[in-house]
Length: 182
Length: 105
Figure (tube, chains in turn green, purple):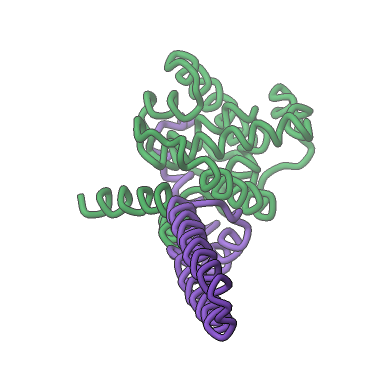
């Protein structure tokens, strides 16, 4: 309760007084979650994830006056991150070139489960939308309705993305003999 | 063959997240973000500018009226003293403006 009122005060100070220190508190509060999320979206590319996280915060600061408080601040922030990631994906077409059907024939095989499963690398083989849905669901523990709000998609579409993403991940981990070793 | 259920996947994601980043916020990251934030006009700054401009206009109007009276009386000493006073008040206003502009920084 105290946290949410504190957060509302920080946001109000940013909107009314352009208070950068208040925004600094928001950056400190959300940076770990956001950077982890983006790290999973970028397939473990920490430089790219940090760049996108910085861009997210800068854009949030620029547009904080358009934040109406209809959703939580974290939902709004993650929506910005997703949009930036979409833009990046479209710009580079780095991720579009990866065909999910190629998962089964990837030449670079992940390390065995004994060496810990590389979730980020596995995510790197999925479509960006699937990555987003899975990361928000499993990493952020967001309910489907909230994921739909972040991704600006209908709930049915999010459920489909989760289902397909989970299937592709399972295929990838099967390759890794995860089931046998477990 | 074991199926990957939600709990297994959740624990894999959580473990992966924990390994990737520490729970504590990175101060360098915060500094980099703060350095990139754009400067923009806030309400405080707008108010400060407004007050500053009004005060300057009042000072100029008072000085002009006083100067008119002094010139009419050919009292040039008073005119110079008044000019000095206006200059001093402008410096004071400038300092006040500078302080106001740093609200929230």
